[in-house]
Amino acid sequence: MQSVILLTLLFLAAATPGPAGMTPVRVAVPIGIATSDISTTNAKDPLREYVTIEGIRVLNPSHHAAQGYDPKDFHLLVGDHVYLPSARPDAGSLDLKTPGVLAPGRAALVTVSFLVPAGIASAKFEFMPHWMDDAGETVDWCCYYL
Image 1 (cartoon, rainbow, N blue to C red):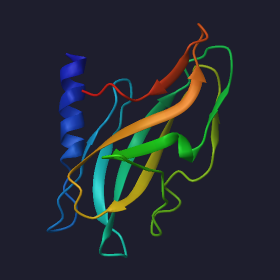
Image 2 (cartoon, rainbow, N blue to C red; image 1 turned 60 degrees about the vertical axis):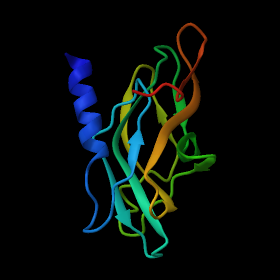
Image 3 (cartoon, helix red, strand yellow; image 1 turned 90 degrees about the horizontal axis):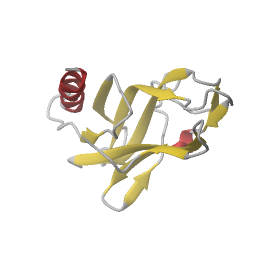
Image 4 (cartoon, rainbow, N blue to C red; image 1 turned 90 degrees about the vertical axis):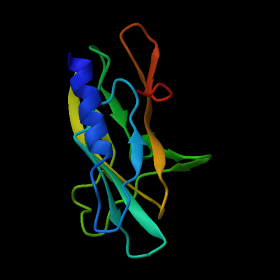
């Protein structure tokens, strides 16, 4: 039941419309990551737009060690191009722009925006902090999408 609700929420988040006339970018979110909203908004440059992913829940998989993350660990993949976060000028205080550290087993909610070419239809999101879990395995959130 939870997976059905999660799939519904992911679909609704990807379908959130932007300003009038703007087609929202459909963003695939990897398994294991939850978000609260995905939106597309205009940038000052008419050839670009912002894709914002809000309420990304990042969870430290280690119960023994604090682990850090950096804005460059968040990626938006469009075709062969990788976009890194770019704080929106009018919402810079909301967008992630500084590194953070999570205590063992703790989570944080972050918002990231990506400045991309206008008119893209779809993209894939990934979070690649190269964290270690309790078994010593590297943990990244990518590659497997619903």
